[in-house]
Image (cartoon, rainbow, N blue to C red; front, side, top):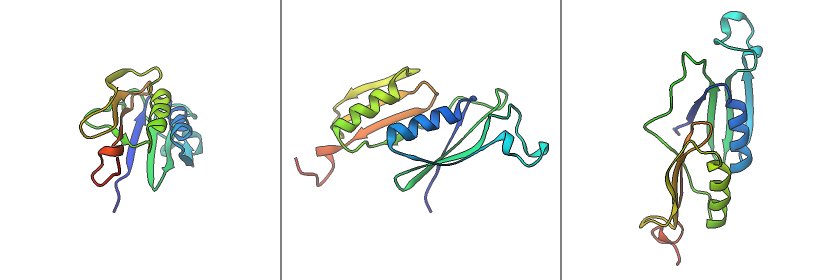
Length: 143
């Protein structure tokens, strides 16, 4: 059993998930919009372009997402999507791309006692992110 992250957006799901796939090296697996529903009762409130369900493969993980109508949308809270970009260079590239236009930055990229580089922010789409590159501070890592 593996958990799957499921994100909700306020009408910009396809834009956000496409951006994440480009920045993180993910692959969009499928996109189902309101217009694809077989009948009106299978639709969610909103336009034909609203995403009902989509998936992005990222490594061995799947991140799923959809749009929500303004009445159903609630701001994400109580979690962060956490990724390790794999190197300091990749960290800087991912941070620059995901934090551009951020709604808030909880912690600028910095060294911590557990990571060579760590940052927390909420991107322009409202997704809370943690970037964590343990690097040399991972138990058993070579300095």
